[in-house]
Length: 351
Image (cartoon, rainbow, N blue to C red; front, side, top):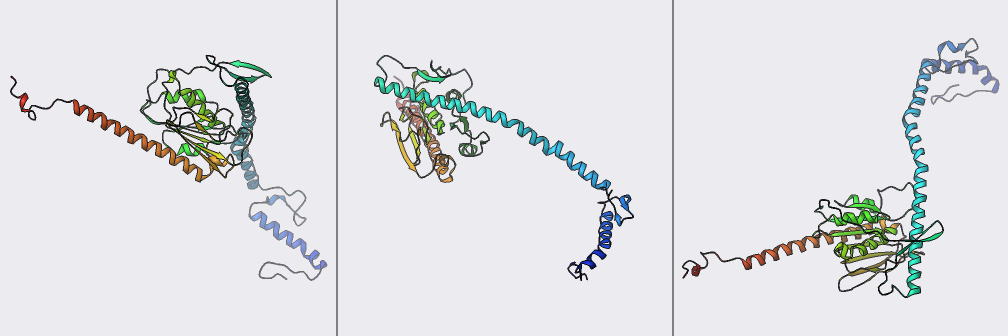
């Protein structure tokens, strides 16, 4: 008996076996009508036999799906798979470079501790570790090529080293930069490129550096290199360091106007900790310890808000300072301008 909801009840097993052929035929007819079975494949053995084949329409659908997979999504997947080894290889190379960088800093720190600091009249070169042997490497000077100046604020975000080969630029510092006009994003090992971009800005434009992890170490290093006669002791209006990773970047040079230093309360080996100013009268340093891990210091909205507010405040102060200088210059010019004949009668009748 068949009920309204389509459920069939059988009185016994024998009843089911006797009615099974008819049910199979009915189902087969329905599949033929819907194009899922070829009509010629039906046999005398209850419409459907052992040689049942898929209908031509079904074959075409299957072939189309296979073709789409092989030429469409399949090609994209293959391309992505091919890129994986290169991404991993690049990350391994960068990881080796990051390790050498930290070892070099540690070596310099040990050397300074042994010698009691830099000897008078002697400049100690940096040390890089390569192929298991300590090699002396002179720091190259960055020359400002004769390129047109970019009359816009220099806002540079410096990303740290990450072990994730598939990490994109759409989070953390990348997301902040995407929402701040004229800003640029660099990697922690792009120090020379950052200095080149800084020197393309005229001295009247503010310079802002924001670095996370090893990028924070790079931002401090860039500030130190700008604090030289070769680079005109170029001022850095704002230096934001987010949980800097390094061993020699806790002293902020005099050319930095303000350093906003955010530190994770989950410290580890190379975390640099609090910063201090070389000259307190010239540099304002603010250290804040936050309840967040290393990565959250660049991704949490509340911390991004703090950085955004600092950047915005620095830009506004630069505009006010520029307007003040323009007004002051105009006042000086007016004070030296000769009075007109109409306002000075003594000049109308010269003796």
